[in-house]
Length: 68
Image (cartoon, rainbow, N blue to C red):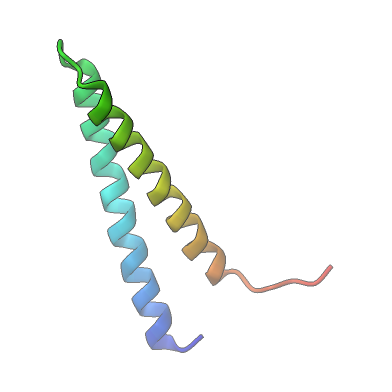
């Protein structure tokens, strides 16, 4: 992996982590509201899980492959 590719992935990782935090706040706010839109809540949670998977995938790409 070149240094440029690594910087690009790190920037993407920061962006995804920020979006993940924003979704967490939105989910908490929606749960706290009196009239919670369950469909919207489900969509936000699904997107949050997708982001978590993408973050994990990018973080794994930074780890060296170790053959046991």
